[in-house]
Image (cartoon, rainbow, N blue to C red; front, side):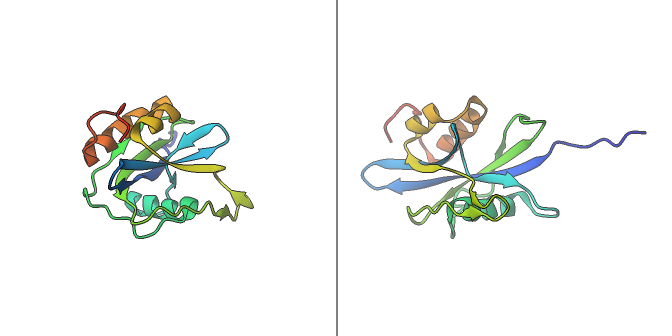
Length: 149
C-alpha cells in the first residue's frame, strides 16, 4: 500500500506596524518579481507559530513580534506542488528590516522589502495571498483595502 502524505506545511507572519498619523503598514518582501510575507517550511517537530517567528527573524531580522490579536491564523490554498502556508498576524515594535543572507543560498532570499499600505500590498501580492491580506486587514481593523491607510 502506498504511503499517503499530507501537504507540505509552511508558516509565516503578516507583520504590521502602526504609524500614528498614517495608519497601518504591512511588511512585504520581494524575491525576483514575487512579493510575499515572511514565511518558510517548518522544521521537523516545530510548531507553526514558532516557524512563523523564526522565519520573520531569518528573512527580515525582526524580533519581539507582538501577537496582540492572539494566535488565530488563515491558510492558503495548496500551491507550488501542494504546499499550504499558515499565516498569523503580529505587530513589529520597530521599522528596521534587515535582509539577512541565507547560509544555504549564500545570499538573502529576498531582493527588496517595503512597509506598504494595505492598498499597495493588495496590488503587489499574488492572487493566492489576497485572502490572507484581507483577513489580516480585518484582524487589525482596516475596513477598506483600497484606502490609503
